[in-house]
Amino acid sequence: MRALVSGAAGFLGLALAERLAEAGAEQVLCVDNFVRGERDDAFRALCQRPNVTFLELDLAAPDAARRLPREPVDVVYHLAALNGTQNFYERPWEVLRCSTLPTFALLEAYATRPGLSRFVYAGSSESYASTVTRFGWQVPTAEDVPLCIEDPLNARWSYGVSKLHGEVAVAQGCRQHGTPFTVIRYHNVYGPRMGDRHVVPDFIERMRRGVYELHGWEDTRSFLYVDDAVRATIALAECAGARDQIVNVGSDEELSILDLGRRLLATIGIEAEIALHPSPAGSVRRRAPDVTKLRELVGFTPAVALEEGLRRTVEFYWPTPDRA
Ligand SMILES: NC(=O)c1ccc[n+]([C@@H]2O[C@H](COP(=O)([O-])OP(=O)(O)OC[C@H]3O[C@@H](n4cnc5c(N)ncnc54)[C@H](O)[C@@H]3O)[C@@H](O)[C@H]2O)c1
Image (cartoon, rainbow, N blue to C red; front, top):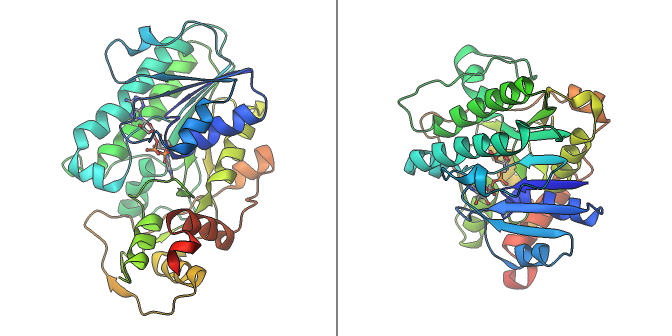
């Protein structure tokens, strides 16, 4: 099996590429431009594997499709995008560029000709978040929810609209060329090496500085550990029933951000009052996936409990020896 992983220096991409290489893929072609991913020890270890090839390429560049290798690939896992809430507000243009154009380049290079057994696209719960907020759609939310963005004038939605666009581009681009695809809608995947623009590493950093405060404490999310997300991703790519389907990947355990903060404090054994602040404007009040389809298709249930996943994540960002 020959796989291409875009965004392979990033959080999910690296974990996925590692797992594919470990499981004996003939070749894992990894692509990234380091707009966010890092050349850290984990990335260097991945590149040293004999069945891994790395290509540094800006998939949003006009000639990206032509610069991708011509050899056939069995599965494309397209994870390259620019996420991170701060990025949505501070550099929406780059978010739009990096979260739309790479999809065209990869579809052009691999889905418009025969041979690909699956084009897997990393979709996001952000593409329906507005439907839940604005129209009170049901939570936990199933895959048939209408996708929309609340306000094109709010930079917050630069990412959500890109992921919405990606689902349509992949579904229609692949369908027109008879290429099998699967859209995976990820819901708050967390774990070591997830960057610093997310509530989990952000709160760990605050705990480290002795600052116990949370924004949007009443909002709810569900969290899936990265190894589980990778396992679900590969299972769906190999599942005949997931062909041409949209599938939620996440946990159905919905909890408030305050509850998450308390669990993180408990992981380290800190007893402290948390100062609570309201959510920023445009933030999403509730989010949790209905994972019935995922369960039915591949029999998936998370293997890493939240307590254990948070323990591993805290250990990565704030190792025990540094806490003494
Ligand atoms: N992590 C989550 O909880 C989550 C939730 C929903 C959806 N997703 C989706 O899953 C995918 C992976 O997310 P992640 O958390 O690993 O993100 P990440 O930022 O860690 O990784 C994305 C990678 O894509 C690379 N990239 C961005 N633009 C590129 C370009 N133009 N050319 C080449 N590489 C480029 C970045 O450098 C980065 O290494 C993304 O598509 C994201 O939208 C993730």
